[in-house]
Image 1 (tube, rainbow, N blue to C red):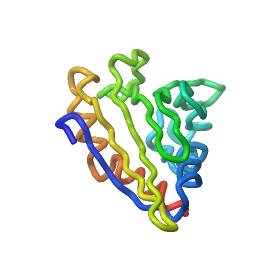
Image 2: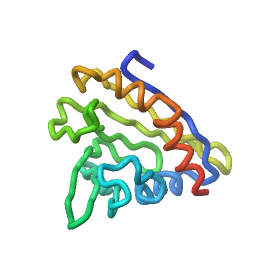
Image 3: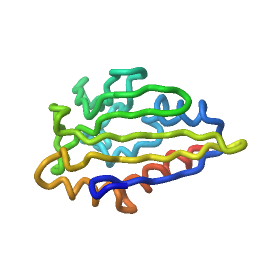
Image 4: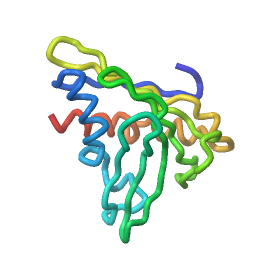
Amino acid sequence: MTEDSTTHEAWIGLPPMAAFRLFTDGFDRWWPREYTWGGAACVEIGMEPGLGGACREIGPHGFRCDWGRITLWEPPRRLCFTWQIAPDRAPQPDPAFASEVEVVFEAQGARTRVVLTHSGMARHGAGWEAVREGMGSPQGWPLLLGRYVGLV
């Protein structure tokens, strides 16, 4: 782990392919509405499957906001996507100012170990430390992974 990254681990009672699908296809089921721009009015948040797929939120009246892009799609083993949310939580359309999230799914008997690393946060520019502090805090990736695992 580097100064501008944070790594978290979770265990889920599913084989890797099912864990991968729940993370990606089921994103809307575990990502909290209060962590979206639309809040309770958010219609959908999720990922378009495959390399280059958009990570996006769809709000009322069909409003769409992309917040990342899939940069690696290797089911059931690994997924990477850009995190195009600025330190002030505004969408960042320029991927040059994005950090990256890598999620690795490792078979461990009947369960899967999920290791999530959010790195390259300094690319966000001024205030990047707020991204690390927020996503590394108990209310960041630990809470999100807890919701993901809690679906099983």
